[in-house]
Image 1 (tube, helix red, strand yellow):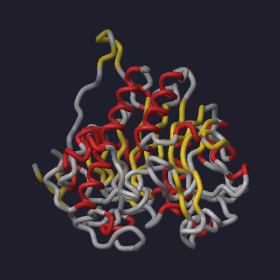
Image 2: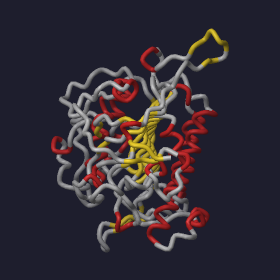
Image 3: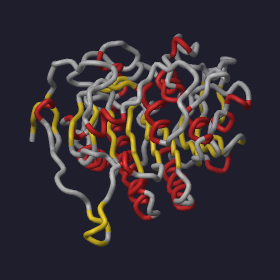
Image 4: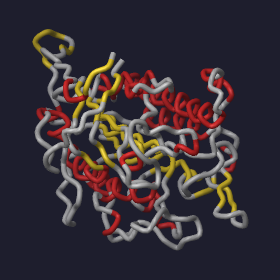
Length: 385
């Protein structure tokens, strides 16, 4: 079923009953309990590479989560990795953090400035448990630059921008290669051989199983898929046996594996009882790379460019706590907005630093105008089924 974005509006009528008919569920604005915050960032997913945009890639879990939440159809990021991730972590444009030049390369003595507060630091001060799983790419030249030095209580993942999804060998030129998978501050040699997406999903499920639901949780799942090298377990390739383009086939299979993993995370949230008080945000870090199998159709350009295909991202919010659900939002939202938005949801004190991001929760949840101003009138057709 196709429809123009501006005409897509699914109204959720009535209220959800909890237990007895006299006990009504509350929206986030009414709840005294701070929500669990789950942020899923994926790597190099193209704008056209999700089912609800009409893709040939199978993403049924992501499609359903988006369809039941708020699809962000005017959502922007930066065209490459480190700048986008720095804005998520600080709420400030990369020109203010010294990361406007490019990505952070493994041999650069550079990291996210330590005098700028990070999102996990603010949430931890507000009483949240903070855990990170996956790709960091914000510098590791000294221990204080590591995720565990920037507010995360635990970390399993990679510190550089890319590497082998099985062996975790990462190179900065042919002459500088090394092992990049870390558990806390130590190399996790024993986990080599496990596919990154599956390894990270299992760690997330472990965190959710062991988390005390009375304590608010911030979980940052930063998947390396579908960044090159294009690697995936064999069973996922069979979904695309008819795809003759080798790059597209492997890229598609990586996203199907990722889709399945996100489904496992949501199921674990429900099993652990955390789901009913959670907010899940899904975002790509930049546009897809067409030379590596991705598609940003109908947008022009791709990763590394300032055309729409490089900076307009796949994104949605899924939560039982949304005031309105099943809608497509065309409000202007930027990756830097998540910093003040999540701190606001957590009831954390306002940052003393000047921010470039805005709190957009009421824009997303209630449909109020974006603090960033008017939305453009250009229309695109998307597929919600």
